[in-house]
Image 1 (tube, rainbow over the protein chains, first blue to last red):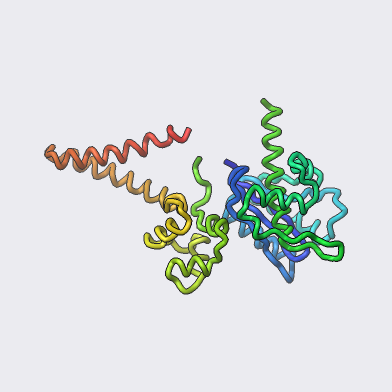
Image 2 (cartoon, rainbow over the protein chains, first blue to last red):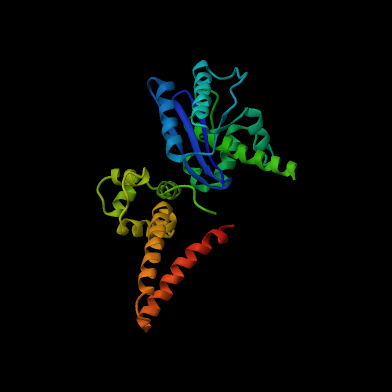
Amino acid sequence: MKLVLSLSPYTRGFGYAVFEGPLNPVDWGVKEVRTDKNAISLQKIENLIDFYHPDVLVFEDYYGANRRGKRILSLLSLINKLATRKRITTKPYPRLRVRQAFETIGAFTKFEISRAIANEWPELEPYLPPYRKPWMSEDSRMSMFDAISLAVTFFYFEKENLHELS
Amino acid sequence: MSPRLQNYLKTYRKQSGFSQEEIAFLLGSQSGAIVSRYELLKREPNLRCAFVCQVIFGIPANEIFPGIFAEVEQLTHERSKLLYQKLEDSPATPLIRRKISILNKITSEKEIEPQQNL
């Protein structure tokens, strides 16, 4: 049973989720970082890795990405290097793959994906951010759902790969 | 399926929606810091605490703290083997036979266990 740690950096820290197999989230949350964001975020991520000893680290595919700020792209690169140092398998997924995983259940936007996740795991419902209006900045809790969606995407495509092999 | 984590206190606490302070209150403690220490494996919960968690979450204590249970089970198995060897040398009274039967059950169940997991 694979232990997966998924990460989703945002402007003020990062969201994370730990899954023990595809149906069992065992930890989730948002880590806020105010100063020295990349260094402190990386330290907190390393703490999570050292505590959970995940088999796989999942995060957004930053290669060629231009919609993310420079600092976050840099952090994603540092996370990749940290995983290499810790000898953990990494699975980066572009946003498109996350959409592909969730479009099968009719969820296309981040809002719909977060609702679909809370529908599957009702214990996450209290964390749901409100619908984002055009003038609103993204709620920090969405980064947690982004991390969860990445973990779900991992298990979705892993199952797809197993079907293809068989 | 074998559990991957040493303890699932944080998992069940988050699933239930309780804060560390609220769990600490239910444990009869004044500070959430003790719950944090249990969750981070910095301190081992005592028996009373394990049973309170069982009552709160409705999950057996050995499933909330599988790491401690596995360690205790292993040590008990090893000590059972030693006691079994010691008792085998004793006269075969009904009492000794009864003890040997129980110890035999403990040690043989532990040996069978790996096959059952397959």
